[in-house]
Length: 402
Image (tube, rainbow, N blue to C red; front, side, top):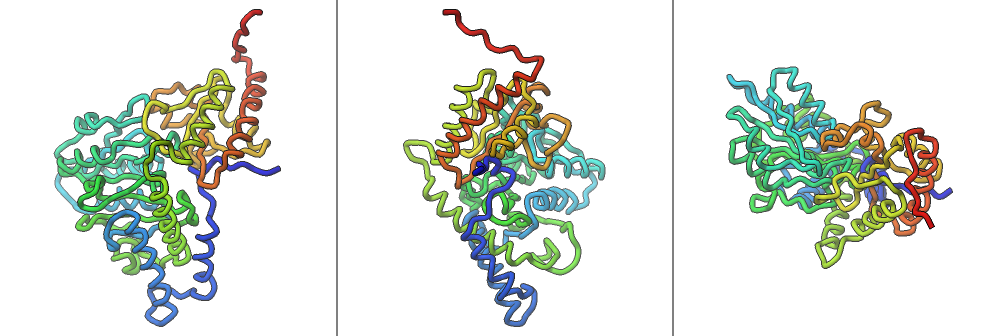
């Protein structure tokens, strides 16, 4: 059985070009990048070259890139590092949203236990944070606003430039989890760019064809940051620990490839290749499966992601049924796999618990083909119909009489 992989938002495949770039740093060039001898300095040069390439992708300074172990560490470093950086008489105030990845939400709850005031913003039924909602939540002691760029479950894209500007003009820092945006959307953090008011931005390598266990936090110049780890003076004293040289090299190569893809995917008269495949999948499912629909369909979404509900079907059962047929998909965030509770993202958008539990995420990669989409469309309706036959709550649509 040839498997079809449609869970790229959980992790992307490691591309051969990325693996080829990494391989020498496991064997021939294994030096510690902090050592002053030749082997160490060769590794240091590779780390700095990767930093340069990633900075080019983000249109920022090399010194504003901090290498981390991935999105979760980057998010935690952004929140804890800024909110606990400066003691003040007033309790610091954090604003975030109900549709964040748990790396942000759980960090926010932990900070609340340490005395930080936390406000969780609601979203629209399409999963959008309205600028007016943020404006109304700001306080004199608001120190940080953290809003996800592209949602990992629905693909919904937030109006980050406008939201960041509102935070900036109120004197607050702005962080965005861009894990699902990096390599898919232009991210221009230059002082003249659309993201000029973004102070901190998180990226995870394994969401953009680099290895797992790699990531970065962009920290705009002059933003004070307290490190999570204490040890050596690595990463300009912002992240102690010996650098993962092979992983960093791989992330740098992935950033180089992403620059090429973004140039190729520049807006044209039609949808991008990935968006066209995503739309083909969506339209095929909706045409073949009654009582289904797209969550967040009414707004701008990432080109590779669709989240579809199948009423009267448990998503977990459908994911297993599709897996047995060779199709890999997800019921939501991979970090919440096996959780009994419905998706917090979908319930924040107003879906009932039953519909949230009936929702499945399909996320395509750059390796997905039209043939795979068509093969998936041959599998999904049958699997849904079979599960509905087993559901006592499902009533088949009435057929028209002859």
